[in-house]
Image (cartoon, rainbow, N blue to C red; front, side):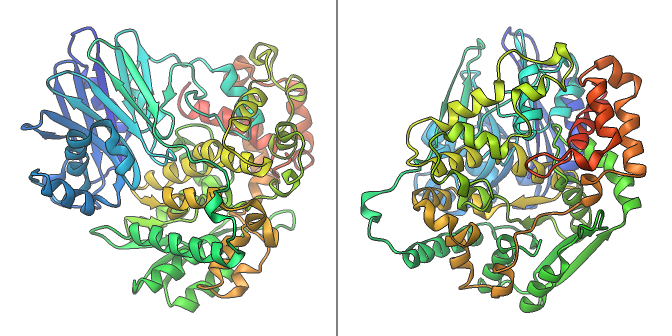
Length: 591
């Protein structure tokens, strides 16, 4: 787990190492254990290191293999690297390090671009070929590891965060109107290749792209599971699916134990994180460190779920750490949370993960976390209504979108409102792609391949890496997801959602955690904005920077200021917080 950056020139001139230095400096929190920049003519790579596997300097990056003529910068973890290394040794390759970075180099040399299909893990990398001058970049199947880039003329820059790209300079900072529409309608999800800024883009997940020395490029998507029923599975019972899921989840958790440092768990007290704790205990992990967080209540809404995380911690005898955040500390840490976001993310969970990660990083460097279970196994409330849908696009928009296009036109400033319904068109195109059997399958595919990438997954990466903490997500093991995609939706939607996962969990953890009401990271003070929080967002949205930008109509903002708690989106988010967060992010990054 690290931060990567680089510049590639396609006109024969030297890469700007000072620009790469600036990007690497911004990425320092992602990799507090070391840094390096390596330049060869038109290509310069930079890296910040977090030591997790092979703690020696032999695994430092940028890493070059002179014999193969390859240089790599890599962010992530390849969980099956020991098996791949053994396979490569059998083919005659020799190694000078003991980590996964060098395995990527050798695998690329041996299998070419197809190497990514062999990787189990999370990754974003760039490989430079000395002889051809080409650079190949790739991103893991779920975009767990970020890859931002900016191309201008004969120059390409890339980095693990959008703010790092900005630090390099000479970036078009104008707001992308289509991305703004996504942010305001698609619950702050801005799918690739867009970001909120015109001048910065991101590589889609499950994509490998090759840049030739002359600047020409080609790419392909190397993974996209079908959400279809397989004939050979026709006779499987609910119990059969339970056993298959449990077996696959055990393997996913076991894979993510690989490290040369201890591995802990972010324990919310829900089914997802609790079953990870239970499976780690089954694997014989002793003195497991677990961490939970809670906030002050507001408007009668409780701000913690300690009763359930305490139950799991006691049951498995973990070394448990509870963090309670008073309102004053919440306010104090909001600027740091917002600055840590590569893109504006409206979820209240951000501050929770930010402060939780700060505490966790004092004890360990690696955690497992439960993100992805709802999108993979059907845990959200908007899936059951789609069961009998005859209009999956319209019905999905009703339950997920923050507002329809017509309403948005009364809230955005006229110059910022696109003519087309950008978000609905994007969602419709994805929902109606082939290889999904039912409306629920279509929604699960959309959420696991689009929404998940640029909401929960990005949130966890940004907030953990702000404190040099690596988060691993076993529910996004691609073999587990491939299995889940074939499960009939009725088994997923059973028991109020995630039925088949709950069936598997009953074999591992206490039923009290499974039979509880679905929870989340509650931060009620940011949902029911009042007092100093209202003063803060009002000051932000009426500042000279905000008014000169003119993103939002003043009459709409006045309604929000007058009664914040009366303007809640279908996904239970605050409209006022959504508007304020975007403006605070823009100001935090001096855009």
